Length: 63
Image (cartoon, rainbow, N blue to C red; front, side, top):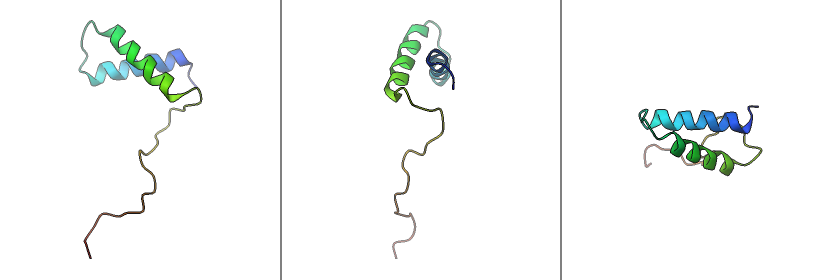
């Protein structure tokens, strides 16, 4: 598992890319990445997790 600093660096890069590669906002992106990584907690893993799992309701015809 990458170190916390590596995870922050990667997240800051993702934020920079998502915002269209703006110049001069590196500290803002770093700070945002720190907040996001810390909010995930120390045991957060970098795996894809569905936002909602098992709702049971299906989309389709109304009977």
